[in-house]
Amino acid sequence: MKNQTRNKPTAGKFSLLRQICNLIPPHLVPKLARETGVENQWREFTPWSHVVCLLYAQLTHSLGLNDVCDALRLHSGPLSALRAASAPPKNTLSHANRTRDPKMAEQLFWAVLDHLQTLQPTFGGNRRPKFAFRFKRLIHVVDATTIQLMARSLDWAKHRRRKAAAKCHLRLDLQTFLPRCAIVDSAAEHETQRARELCANIHAGEIVIFDKAYVDFDHLADLAAREVFWVTRAKDNLQCRVVRKFQAGTQDPILCDDLIVLTNPPVQKVYPVELRRVTAMVEVDGALRPMVFLTNNVTWSAQTIADLYRCRWSIEVFFKELKQTLQLADFLGHSERAVKWQVWTALLAYVLLRFCAYLGSWPHSFTRLFALIRSALWQYWELRSLLEVYGTAGGGGRFLGTPQQAYLAGFG
Image 1 (cartoon, helix red, strand yellow):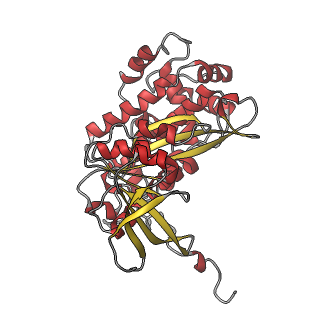
Image 2: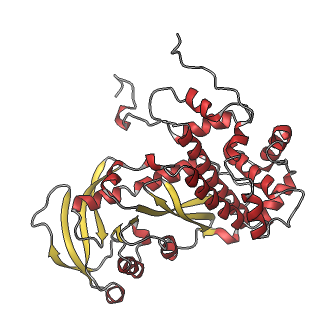
Image 3: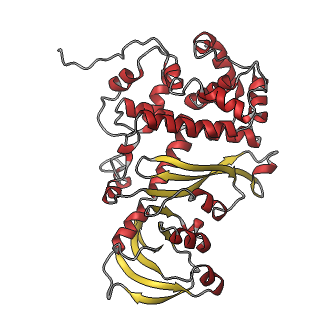
């Protein structure tokens, strides 16, 4: 019985919440507060207490201001041991979300991400898709996700007639499955208006993949001039002329592989050079349908281009983990600053949990990790020991069956 797995984690000196917050360097929040002017506002509710409150709201899926403030007040003792953090009254937290500059939360996220990757340079490397290992260069995926908000009194986030929404534009590093650029703004702005900013730091020889919503041929010409390879989908109204066919006949799943030039005069003026168009059969919702891809690379095989675009779905997994696991459905405030504070804190909580999973070699899903830590947030256990004890069940957190198997045998 010596090899029997422990059924209880090792006791520790600090609560799980304190161990997670200790991943943030002590000097970082006061420094950013001074730089962004947050330090001089509401001295009785420090910027560090503000960050801890919003992190707690994310890690516990708090539904409102009362939920956060009451719970922290009940645990005021362990909370005060966390670098003298304090539980605020409801009005104080609401006022801080509404008046403090969310630029501090944005800078804190990037600073913590850089700090964690400095501590562990291989952090995040185990999430790379198998297909991406064929490339000895960085692959970036660009996309945006819409975050629904309450329609009342949200003039800054008007999306449609009776809807309000924010939008998070993001560039994901496919090698580490971590963000490299993110922009949080209202959903009224089209994706093409943020494409240049998202791709500004991509270097020559790297690959960027994005959906057809980001297709702007002026921007694509700029990427090609910088020797950046790009792959995207063609819009239905693309006007072009075939210059050369790379394949004489069709080879399933590749239907055609052509070198084309654009014929629409305004578009041809900004993108006069040739580009490649690949049409392939792609499985969508269990059925095969044709998709048309565009790229500025003429040396890869047509199947490689189709497979590269398939890697774009990785960012959908990222958005699913972020929106369905963390707290981006109920907001603690509906002003522009309050929403941005909560979105950037959600990204910070995601990175901290991913780093905890990396340290504990967590083999299961992000959702299961979140549920485990949420249930034991005030327990005095060693975090790594907790992940080792509760990470012994089989399966990798995926639904291994198919939709066709989701019925009882004998019942059609």
